[in-house]
Image (tube, rainbow, N blue to C red; front, top):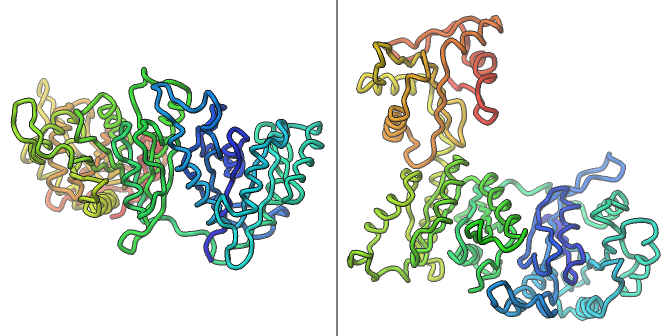
Length: 524
């Protein structure tokens, strides 16, 4: 049995996105008083707790939809550059219809403080007549419940119960702002959805975040992967606002692709919504396994592309540089009059995005479906690289060979030494080197180490985090814990010679000194 699905529908600015966030108990959807913020279907799986605290937890999928008729009102139809947003209406209505047609329960959100409007009545009529998506699933009509939003206190309750006139029974009342009726609302919602006997769906095998500037083709790629118009694609820049998770199967594996808002320079932001969109893009990068950094091949690499590259670098996430719209770039000439080829474009990218010189590059045309499968296979390969763990003995032997080839430059006769090394984490592969003095390892030598690591370790195309720790600090931690002293690895075998066990080194000596996101365990 699949996870029960709940669709939230209603006219603009009645609090649908706030309702989603309240149920999820997390800020998933962007909430702003500007009409038309939500355009796509935004879904999230949440767990509803039992009212008595003793029953089973019910996982459900909640879907937020765009406001019906959002771009009909005067003053809401055109954006800051004069583009007609009314052209998005059919796409938004399609996404609403898909959410309604796939739902096991429909929450019809109506603003208590505004009362029943003609638009609310029109939506209610369309739901009854199945003109806003089909409700007859499995021979029975999907239940519709009116949710009276913005019921901020006891004085609004009588107005809320007037919503029963819409013909869908007693309304549920809630205020997402003051949390009035929150517990009662969640308890009644729990009772309305069936229990999924199979439990929550397993985590996806891979999560990819697709980031890029406006109109780079991110949503087109999502739809090509999903095999349906899952998100709205438009020539209007900035159509996508939220970070949209789309789940599908790929060669027998489950994949979640996160479509993010197209970004532009911060000084060009028109309103708070663009700042929210930037925040959602950063969160998408933080929670994904692999980033697809999408570059528009028909335009020069911009400051926005460089800024996104920096965001990805700081996240230490594996990244594929996806050169999209190759069908528009191929056959053109560069500023020197030479024909644009994949090899020359790769040279151009390496020059402009130097911090991602390790990242693989994929040439693609999402519109034509060119090279999409190969790009996703590459993303799975990067996830496998980032998951790899190298044994401590093997790592010490490799470092010993690197030092024999070229050690750190001496300063005033002082010698830089590496006593011990271990990989303490995956995602990203994190290497800790216990040395005599971290200050003796210059940036140039650290870059040399990184290059050699990429040649000798199975991390040639993913970020590596390198942490240098002074031997004195590690020994101090170990002695304070009464565990012994760390000694240098055996020169012949590369294995470490310590009075500590590997688990004790990790728990007592390293973790107090490592960053919060660096420590895991030693495996040898």
